[in-house]
Length: 606
Image (cartoon, rainbow, N blue to C red; front, top):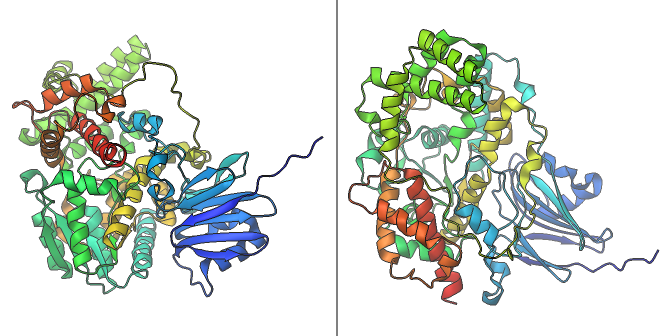
């Protein structure tokens, strides 16, 4: 057999890396490890671990890290990225040379930029379920290392395996009090770990339970934070009462800010230092305001409550458990508690005008109808009718009321829902390329933990972290995510839904864990601020600003369906369309504009 010639691998880093290099091994490390004091350069330390344990050492690391190892003997390169994607790591291959860095744009000249059509398709399509993070980016030929994985690369192969081994079973069998005690201890330790990485920490303070928990926990360590709240000026998102309660409790230095007035300019700026078009439904004018204030205060770390609600959990799985057990009495009770404590505007655009009794009745009807529909889809007609009789007897379900209440909401929609604005290619030349994704992370996850864990680790959340990284780099600070802690997540997965659900507010674990740190106003609230009105106004303003720019021949319309978009815009811009009418349509439509601005800045203007 003829011996295959190996292609030499040349490494070309873009960014600030600690580097170890000898004749057999090169290590490039951008790390900020928690709970581990390094006495040597990170790359030198990691080279020693690799020689002893191979890449399995990654399982022991906590914190932020992006590591590239080049095993010269094996002609193999390993990309290792932390579990949550705190540190971005992009790479491209060209004739045996690997270039890598923390920004996708740094790896491309203007002439090398090619839009990744498959990535655009997913961006312009409504997500029906939590999807795992994928290595593909908005640029053809640029790949992103998978969080929580080791990606091995040779000139002829590429594969990925996860190093994150979940073990929620370690916390099973504990009583509620012990679980709450452990949650408190682990959350406070996570906040402390982030504080140790900063000289002058600050924080986002929206008035919600998550951000309030983070800044109040930080205050318990004696940190007086500079905190920031961006207020669009709408009644639906007015959080001043809750913010003031936090400020009075901990004495932080707080600023209320307004979003930047020129949304278009902020999006143009973002295109030049982020790794793709805007990801948030509310545009960067909102986030830039807080980032600029943090820069003015010389803050070097901005703590956020990002994804705290998903990590702590609302306990809504309790509905399914009680339904499976046919515990109708308790099911009715929790559905009524749910209606009393939460904002369920997705059930009715008139939710805030309904009496408490009407809300309870609607909550029960919504649940019962969903189960009857599910049974009909399974073609179990007799079972569906029998189930409806049980609902009527034990839950007070009424077909007539349910159909009237819910159909009024359904028919108040101004246009059929749009699932995607992506423009299908007229020829079969384009075929989606296979791409590595983070699905291996879920292989050994138990079914009862799957939904929450997929929500915590879904690709959209990782991309938001990457975007905050880019915004922080641009304005001169980092962002911290105390809820993203592996041990905290394992513990939360083990806590029963009944404990999380509490009396209907949800997230009962952190309410109990931080009842000494949080003000009563925060502990008692069960709702969240609603920024759909700001998103709606932003869309209308941005649409008016860009209408002339995105004319018939613009690059955008090679990827987005202009006819479908124009029809949707006619609906959204109509005088009788409100911000509560199809918020999902507005979010999807504003992404078309975000994509167009990104293309204009990086592809059209070049």
